[in-house]
Image 1 (cartoon, helix red, strand yellow):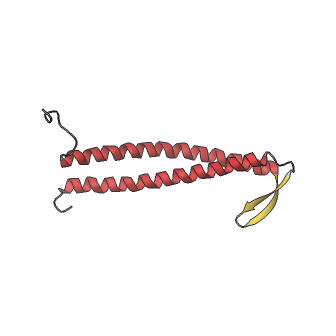
Image 2 (cartoon, one colour; image 1 turned 120 degrees about the horizontal axis):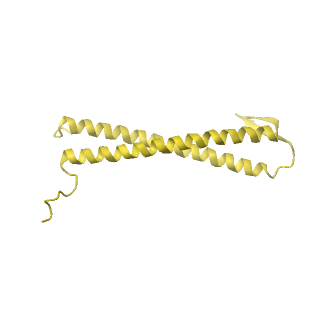
Length: 121
């Protein structure tokens, strides 16, 4: 990067930071989706339980609880995760657009932005 002008180096550095943010965002989105799926599966399985008392895992300990309380807690958590997922998806889209804009700017600064109107004639 010694032959690259300082303004281009700065853009490349910003692009790399955006890439890291984007990867973290994707990771958070995957974790949120995974937890939501787990809750959905648990709620579906709980529909088959006839007993009103069930065991709930907190850390490495199981506690006896009533089915209704556990269901309510899971549904609330799912709702929170849905909001979180929506927010993360919006942020991901904004970051993706910033990445594309940054990449385009770097290509223009380096003169590799694709064919110009005079090329190919």
